[in-house]
Image (cartoon, rainbow, N blue to C red; front, side, top):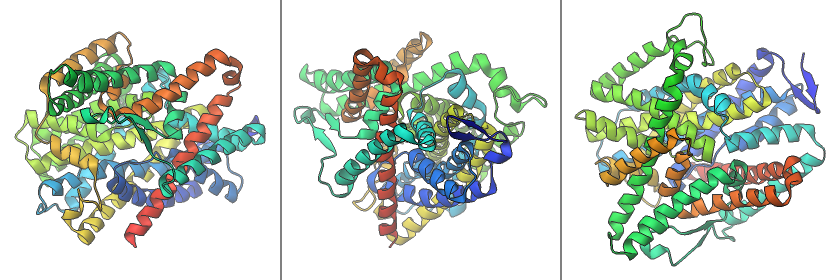
Length: 546
């Protein structure tokens, strides 16, 4: 039987959470969201987090069906959101193939092998590392926190629900005027920073301010220090002192940021995951123990061997490159989980580039196959990063992670097939020249294409790598430092505003936060922009298809 806690209805069994109606609703939502995500990722070179949108849609849909509970809603929105970032993983990498070679001939079944392979690897590593990042390390996962807060407060009703939906509505209206009517500028630019190649400014984003507020001043402060190093130190300071020109400065900034993120990934593996290898990876070889895994995964090593063979035979990837890719996904999904958990940002194409470069260093891999490596990694990281938010919400709501994982399987496999189909439809309808054009700029895929040749400034990359490993070992939040160095300054500045607001509230009005009011407002602001962002994405996708 279900129990009542603070007016919220919880499930007490697996079958009350993983339901046929929930998976039907989740599957339909996954198809719609995957279609829109592919179009929007190509069109506007960004992808709004789907979790808030799908949480609300799942709640309203299941409440209309009656006799639901908060855990069934959580499991349903896990299925619904899983395909969106699978589409993002493809859209942020593969169009670069046709940007470099419009005559490239890529078979549909090859794309399917690459995409499904990335999904399967993502499912394996989600099952293995979920407990470490969500339960053991207790990373914030601001999107997951906000989704859980929204579901609980929305289910309880009362004054808190009023605060939540007022803030959600305010952010929704603001986003509508900013993104649809273009009555509000997206970014307030700092013109004095622009000549140095810096995207200096503040993004007018309730969502990112809320992310900064939820994460808190420590992680956000480190993130902003990284932005100061990258823009005021390398771009502006380096050019002012005559140390390097604009192109070199940009290469140093990007390479240092990537090096810091890779070093963090190495640090996570060496310090956090390898010492717990028996608990995390033991289930792949043990008949009777689950360890940290969500479900029995004794099949995982066989699946990896089969995937390595398929990548080699069907995608023409050298066997060494296939093996490096699978090992790289292990590293990259750990990086993605840490990055999303601490910042709410998932630069999946960057993780793809990192493994792509490693594969090129270890084997004589061709240009086309290099994109395949990046796509496999980006799909896996997109899936893991997104679903970790759902698992964070599930941990807060005490959902069964096994039910969530099965829902993830359904949504992500649907997402794999739908995203490949949509990519091929676009390719056949508009021709390969549409990628990189005004119609589909696909900026991230362009960045992957530019990096196929390798790291642009190796000394900066190696410095970042070593520094990050050392800092991670002494418990410094170096992943957010690397993000700050790498990302455009206007993103970091906006997140910093949120962290600064949290610092001020904690000091000036501690009771305000003890009652959870600040978190509720932040969840509403985050949800308002995220929901309208997804709705606009759906409208854009429909207009393009028409």
